[in-house]
Image (cartoon, rainbow, N blue to C red):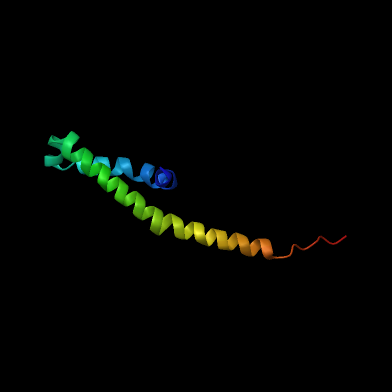
Length: 80
């Protein structure tokens, strides 16, 4: 359940694109509920996990480091 919440951006980004791409294959389009549905689900979960690990996590990690550095800097007081 937690994984779904963490990778929900990837799930919402990938699911429709994969669905459209897979259903353009004639064999899959003919058997869309069986093969197409399972293939769409597997591809969506795989790509959502990959984008979470290799795109979202590195960016979030760099942003946290940046925030820690800026909090440590002294703030200049305005001249009177």
